[in-house]
Image (cartoon, rainbow, N blue to C red; front, side, top):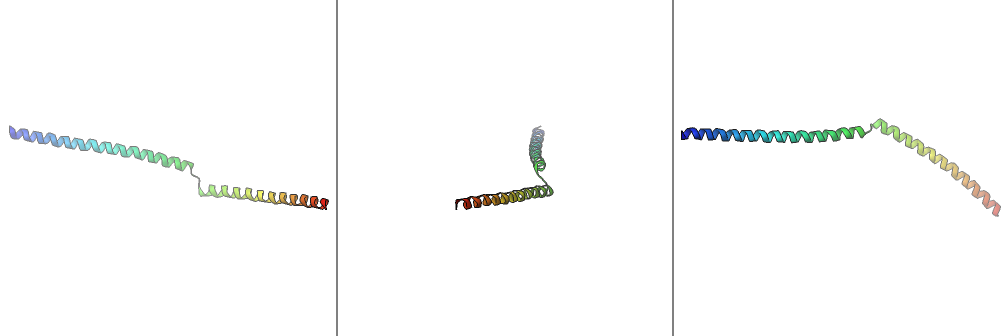
Length: 93
């Protein structure tokens, strides 16, 4: 009877250890899956906000065109100012 009790105790202990390992593994796997879901959500959000190289090139060309236009307009304004200043200086002489 004592020998049988030893085997039962050993079997119950082994079952408890195996059960504990299973519970721990399930908890770890669930935590990993939750972490993966967060990472995937962040990646998807980043992909949604990113632009392609073609879009970036198109936007950069538009900015460059706008700057060229502003530069030309500034040159014209400077010419007009120079003309006005020249006329004012001639009047003062």
